[in-house]
Image (cartoon, rainbow over all chains, first blue to last red; front, top):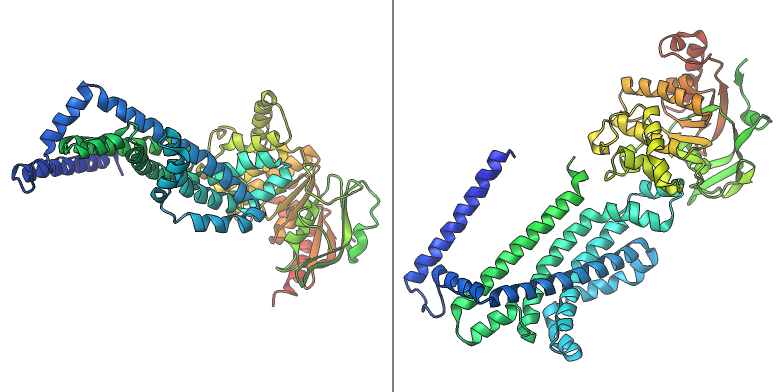
Length: 254
Length: 267
């Protein structure tokens, strides 16, 4: 696609977004639902501005971002390391991989009460929750990437006399990177969901707690403001990761 | 006569041998792929291997590479039992796409061999450039394999193999996937490289004329189970020339003999 076409499509999707917000305003003004439960973009915007002015929105956003990033990084580290081990070892594939299949479908939010019992209402509990939930896509894609190394690459490695660690860092890991990047993106989405769940359970600051408290105070504009910020976080973190992916896999586009 | 009819002729060559196979058999499950095969490679010679499909050409190459171990018999490399791949034996695979690393550019792919051999970073750059010059890839240092033609990618793989500073260069139909013009050009370049580096070359091909053009000796394998059928000496003068060598009576006579040999199995 040419640059012209791409900017055209970007403008079109932007126009759609503006249209949707405008429609939202019309619905809110028509009082389809009580204004106290369903504020329009105008009230939401006012709540956002208020939050920014008194600094609370910014500090909550940063808290949520920090937890999300730490939990996701933890999940990535464990997922890729464990996945590399299982993917390169035939023994581990037989003995450990089936266990993943049993644990993977477990909804991570169901783990929240258990994590709470053991770790209390702490940051550690939130990070554990995120790490547990976001681990699976990274683990499974890494196992897949590592167990699908072309036989020729293994032969090249043995004929060059590459050590096992050099084989992993120089051949297996870069070869599995396209799969791993997909897992990292899926994990990021899950991390955002679980940071909100964790914050709503612990109520120790952050956007999740902010939304929960606003709901208890029947402060609908504040809820919508929090949701809007979460939407922007999802959009931006995903965009940043896409950029990283484009750079890391630039050899694929040739 | 240059034609030696008996399969064991390689055995009584007392010259400086690099790789020796004695009575080796290879089996995949119940099928015997190679049976009691004997052969030796002399230092600096260019040996080509031909044979109908199923005669175990690639298996023989993998045996020499140390990627396979025989169920009986032995393989010796420089007088020692050869059981695992060695850095001194380089392999040029036919499927260069899988053999090269797509995420490394030309320099990076050659560098892999130097990294494996523990060459210090500071010395790599000069060596890489010299190797890329040898295979005619100057100006493509920063290109990724996907940006190169098939011929260039195969040149790159050869450069990586030369980076191993091998005693033996094993090639498994390396030019099989290339067009005729590129193939002839690479044949000449390969002859030049082998002559200069004094490496021992072992070249599997299904192209009979290519075998004559490149080889000092041609080993003809027959199938079911794979074994040495005949060994042809190639007394053509060097350096060879794509036009004049291919017109020589000796070339045409060998061509006739090899075609007659292959035809027996292609019915």
